[in-house]
Length: 159
Image 1 (cartoon, one colour):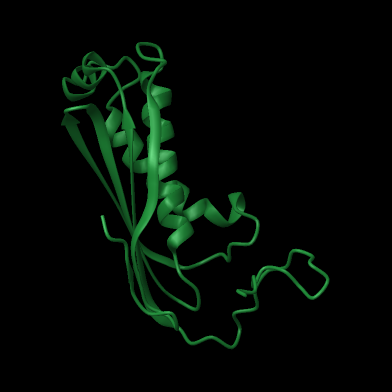
Image 2 (cartoon, helix red, strand yellow):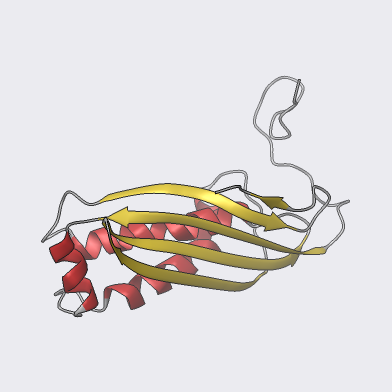
């Protein structure tokens, strides 16, 4: 049976002690998407959304979210993130924006949560900026696709 490292012997929540772990270069890549009407995607691509340049704002929001993850997820360690990249790819069939976050750190613990948080908040930002014209948008498919570094090594999701 797998034991959860965020619980003590009495089953109470605790933050994992990483003080004895080795600093290694770590990377996490997460992906997700936001589906929308074709007309909404066209407005984004034509930069006609009243709130501004959707992709620029979503990219900045994703970067900020990665850096703020320990304030949102209770057991996450604050990390000295060295890089956050947010890629937004429009697709027309079905109409959607594919979101990818790549987060890097030289640290004692990984940045998987930071990458997934970045994708989530980038998607939420797109929703917020476009909700006046399309309340049926849906955010989904948020997942870790790759991580490397640390004792557990490399993980690559088969997609």
